[in-house]
Structure formats: structure tokens, C-alpha cells
Amino acid sequence: MNSALKWMPLVAVIALATAGCARDGFYHDRNLDYDEAEENAPLVLPDGRDADRYRDAMPVPEVSGTRPAEDGVVEAPLPQALSPGRARERGYVERRAIGDERWLVVGAAPATVWPELERFVQSRGLTVTASDSRRGILETDQARLSVRQGLRSGDSEIRCEQGGAPQAACLTALERHFEAFSASSSAASLTAQRPVAQDRARFEQRGDDWQVILPFATDRLWAELSHQLELDFSVEGRRELLERDPASRSFLVDYLTRSERERGLLRSMATLNLGESPRQVRLVMESRGPEETVLKAQSAGEEALSTEDQRELLERVAGLLR
Image (cartoon, rainbow, N blue to C red; front, side, top):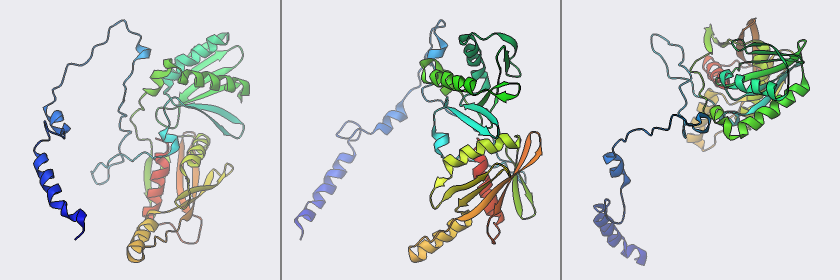
């Protein structure tokens, strides 16, 4: 007999003997501490404190809306995509462009960005000729600055234009200003900013086809999705961004559909070989008006996408805007 096996009965006896000593013996059972823990009064900070220096250590994000009810049943909210873009801290500053248009996207709500935009104008010594905080517009003697709600909850779009044309030097200065602000201790309000709870994607089924209606202008939506798809659709063999066409407002992607994933699972159980094969799909945008765009998923090959595969892919893409 293996000598190591001779010790097995002794090990079992020791384990049973020490199991009852979890509280005060060798192994302290912390579950008992949680069970007996008492709630203390909340910490009260002095009224004269600097509010910008304090925030929640671990803020809990709010639910970003619910899916439409079907047959009287309200479904759970759509999951947010686990992409590099969503993993970043709030307060980031990024550029967007389409055609001749240029603007910045800041990871904070307009209410947080507006006062900092005023500080930027003041620090540059610009003369304010008109200011409208409700519309988010600052007119100066050199340019017109504006801030508006971004396409994703909790984001803002900042523009600097003169005569309707973007000002490159002004955008660069704004980018540096907000990068410095978000990196400073005074930017705590940016990272603590919680997105507004809302569901802005509306799904419609037309026969065997699904489409999602988004309340955004097509140009803005294409620029934002172009950026988000580049971040999220970057997994070889699963989902990849192959082409983007700003003229037709469309994207060509490789995507491992739900039905193909399920077939691959069945194959793997029988042959230990996944054998999964992504499908080429074209995401197409159609304008329905100044602030409404329809997004569809169409097969780029001969075989049509199933109803379930269309819905699942559109849900993932729409989730990038949350």
C-alpha cells in the first residue's frame, strides 16, 4: 500500500475534530461575524467641509432602464457590454469625427461639464457675449462653445465652432483642459457621476426581421458606434469589425451568432470540437428624421439571419450605447 494513503484516516479524524473549533480554534469562521454584526449610525461629516473632496468610495450604478414589456411581462434590463470602452473610469476625454464635423466626448453628465466649460472660458480670458445654461451654449468673442447630452448615458458632447465650422485649436485646448481636470483631485464629481436611468432603444419586429429605433441623429450615431464597435468587436473568431462605410452609414462585421454558438456546443459534446463559424453581417442605419435612426442587421451572405440572431446582435450593439 502507498505509504501516503496510510495517513488518510488520521487526516479525516483531524478535520472532523477541528470542524467544531471554527469560532475560537485554529480556523475563524467569519460568517458568524457577519451574522452577529450590528448596524451603526451613519458617519456625519462637518457642514463646512469641501464637498469636492468627498465622494462614495464604491458608488453603486443605477439600472439603465428596462426592456419593453411583452404580453404584460416586463423583462430584465439589457446587460451592458463588457468592452474596454465600458471598463474605463468616468471622466475620460475622447474625440469623435464624421465628415468635416469634429467634437469631444467626456465621460460626465452635462450638468457636471457646464461649470468646467465656464472655467475654461474664464481661464482663457475670452469675453462671453451670450450664455444659456439650459441650452448648453456659451458664445464668446472668438468661438461658440456648446455642451449636450452624449449618446451614452452619463456622457457629454462638447463642440467649439466658428461660423458653423469646428475650431481645431479650440478643441485641442478643451481636450487638454478636461484631461487635466479629470486627472486632478477636483474631478471626484466626474467619477462619482451616475448615469441617468433610461432605456432609449426601442425594438420592433417586422415580419421575420428585427430592427432597433434609436432617438439620435444618424451622423452622431454612426460616429459613436464606429468608435464603440472598434473597441468591442475586436475578438478574433467571435466578433470583429471588418469595414465601416460613412457614406452608406453601415458596418460590416464578423459575428458568431447565437444559433451558431448553440450548434457549436452540441458539436463539442459529441466530437470535442467546437467547429464554430462566424457570419458576416452588415449593420445598416436609416434616418427616420432629425433625431431618429433605424438600425438593422442583414446577412452579407446568401443565408439569411434568423429572427433570434438578428435580435441578439442588435441587443448587443444597442447595449454599447448605454
